[in-house]
Length: 323
Image 1 (cartoon, one colour):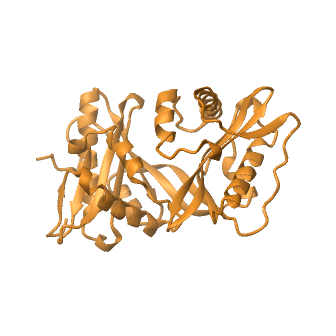
Image 2 (spheres, rainbow, N blue to C red; image 1 turned 90 degrees about the vertical axis):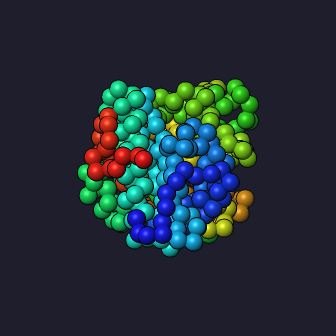
Image 3 (spheres, rainbow, N blue to C red; image 1 turned 30 degrees about the vertical axis):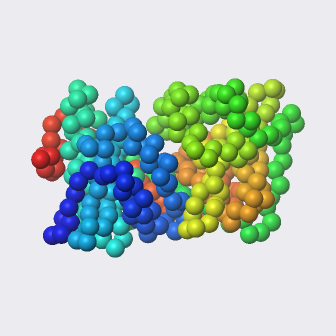
């Protein structure tokens, strides 16, 4: 890094400033990027050792100029790295340094696991981050797309198949477990998908402020056939809609349930005053989800690549040992 920059472990008291840098980096790459929240990061930090798995980069004036962390999924054979450079500090070598640290830590985790791991990063395509990853031997494994729709005009009306009804989630334990079962069944053929136990799934989705009335459930034959798990997200100061997961059980496909759930989510957010709705989707979805969203009027705002390389035991190639 350039003179005047330093790297160290983050402090919890710095989380708000860290998120300012993280969110500024996100908006610089995608104007529709939702702000990440303190609650989300506290949940991430609860799963890692911030002394070893997270780094803050400070600038010449002591300000937060960059941040990165790794989350280990050694049971699935992979490690996920996240790294952000505040736009005001681009060109200072922060991204390279954070990537070196992530690679070194991934190698340590591979040694502890006793086998090689796949280290992966998600970055906006066509920018400096992609070039950096490619130069360090990463390959592009997948492309995901951010899609949005503005709720400033007339919306299509959902058409439900005979025997299918719509209701909100109750938020009860029984309802949540039934939703989880539906989602797991629907995502069973997703690329790279691994079964997620209820506790892991719930920890990701049932955060502070969870609103079950934003979870739309399609019922058929007395069971949950599909679900649109929605929430509000802060997009440049507006509370925009977000479809976090849209799932249709495999035996209930080809009935138009997915489209009707999506259109119902649009209507729900429009009623509550949201200016837009966004979601993320695999550009090669085996179920054609990206095509469904496009037919419903959503457009791609940015493409995000998943880049991977092997993390072997010992010090990662090209990365300095941790002092």
